[in-house]
Image 1: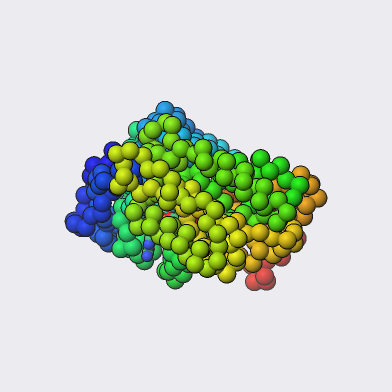
Image 2: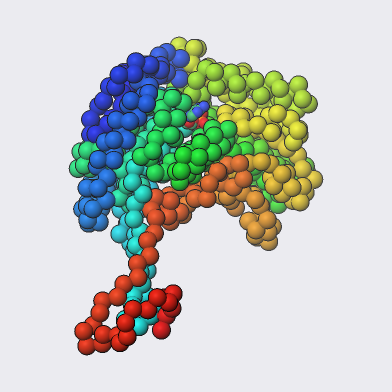
Length: 502
Ligand code: NAD
């Protein structure tokens, strides 16, 4: 579906002077479907300048008018959801229903942002001193930027910009160069919704564009979502340049299965959360920490389900799992099957043997795979695979499972499967992970809660969307005011003492 994708600056397409481009692929066929312009400092400058120029007008636009634009954007997005999902599927490879799900989750953040007047209310205290009132107001930061990963080209940007824009900021988005078209689609919807030119801008590209954003003096804040090494780099570099920054990183999400769990539910969940979107979700289940006494039973049930999974192109409605995003990524994921076996794991299900769709032999295919008897020192356990591979780690009991999860450097999501309420409650209390599921495999919070992990899955203090998102995109000002009442004018002259309350 891609053709040539270029930047969106100041309310329209903008081809800058930089001549670097990248290829966009159809992951199902392996063919190049288009190209995308890569921004250099000139294009980033132009985008930031457009956003800076638009800021004073947008921040002073009344809340009612801002919300009207948001509601119009919401309606257009809702009407265009199928088209956007097809675009996402064609460049990412995920199946249409999954892409449709990501658009729906993004839409929920827009719904949340439509309630911004309530969220921007400050506090007010009357008579903090005689005749003096004090109140706080929340103000936007200015030009803010979002740098996003390939795996949710519609949803992850929508974790950021609806809230940022609703708060009165202007926005520069740098989406993944692997599936860039969704960003342009969203930019056109904003224009149609009546958002003033320059409030939402898109620059495409790679590290060159990212660095220009991180170093730009007129960018006040950076939101990032991507892998841990890049998140760490973004956090450090943006902070060095005086910016507020939230950088969400990679993950290694564990599912803990206790002996009293409903094993059919656990097997359904392992398969859907491990192989949905070909495992390319930051909340995908990657490791299954199962108590040994039920491990064989669980594995058998997973195997039955995997045998029925249909792997095929994202635009074929019979497909349940699509290809991986690039050939390079597919090969890297497959390499963990080899290293796992080399390091002592058993390859219980080999996705390389899964049938490849006819006519699409050059696509970036890898079927669902399961490694059993995985140990915590193996590279397939230590590293984020980000593909359709489940690692079964057999544990003796609950305590060993919790020790395993808490010993892992990542802390994005986790889930426990049990029918013991006491164990579940203890788990939610003890586990060092930002998002926890109880018999729910992908516990992605609703838009009015905030999304984010702990440990090396987040650099910074604020999670995305929800009240933490509003907090990230605003700063507070405390005002202390006296309006003299002529009938009660205070006596006495100038007092150089430190103001106290009386
Ligand atoms: P990535 O880190 O390679 O890229 C993310 C963004 O950073 C892209 O826009 C990319 O162009 C840019 N980038 C890449 N290399 C860079 C460099 N050297 N310097 C500056 N910028 C650079 O991530 P990805 O492969 O696109 O996405 C997958 C990763 O994202 C996985 O690790 C996944 O766990 C993570 N992710 C995390 C969350 C979360 O909420 N924690 C959500 C989605 C994805």
